[in-house]
Image (tube, rainbow, N blue to C red; front, top):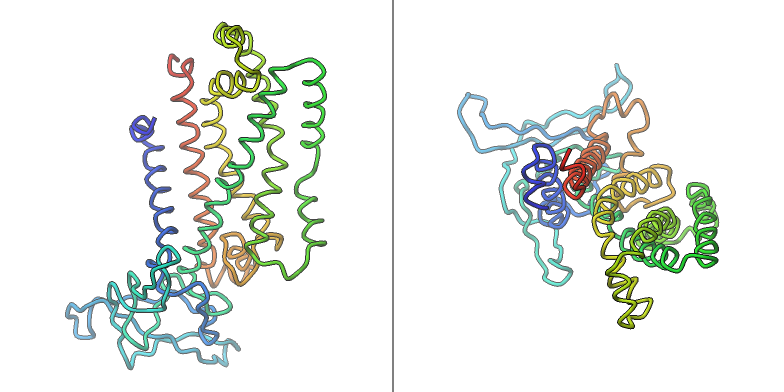
Length: 351
């Protein structure tokens, strides 16, 4: 399957982009020039730092930048940023910076890039609190890009087993289980999350909120998946290999888990690749509305919330970067999901 995905012109590129994204968030502490808690209130809404490779005399130079100085512009009646050209700050690779721990154990203070002492380099500018947007994108991606997989680890086992039992036993067991699943599907998840957000204590940590979002989205979303699995099991349970297993005395649970559910693997893989984008969008939407990850912790959704003001869209377009990354990640997952569906669909391959 992996080779077939790479052969596809669009899915292969999408897979490479996703691999790069996940490598970046896995190494966020090393790649980010600043920590997730870094803040310089004097540099609020500072634009991206320019990089120069030529001196004033037109000669080649090592890459360097200038610090920003905030000054009041009386004509515009607002603060503006100007470059302090009195001192150059050279950019370097593998510089010493704020300390972090590799794998949460090994202390380290080496970052991929940065400036010399006293310099400030903002690759994608800063937000209202003077926090480096590029660094926060890396740390926020850890939440936005992993919430989908964590939800699937809860959703799919429940949906598989529930749908398998319902389809295999049939009769009144199937009727009762499917009516319950339909009742769960009727719960409006968006309004449920709003209600929970209003009654939960305000001092909950972002980790607790993150866990709650994952669990709620998974516990609501399993029902639709279980209905599809149930329909597949109804068509599989009368196959000869299932009857053979029952004849030799295999228990009903073993027949379901070992013989029937593995036949749904193709659909499960397709459903997983196509479900991850929806959870990424759900987390982003909830955080955008203030119901998900809360400041000062970062996610792409709550970072994008700052760009909803038209002034920021016009004059601070770097704040829209989280939205661009959400679009790219969702598009890549959808491209890969469509390609996986084509690969695992024999009829589609024949066409």
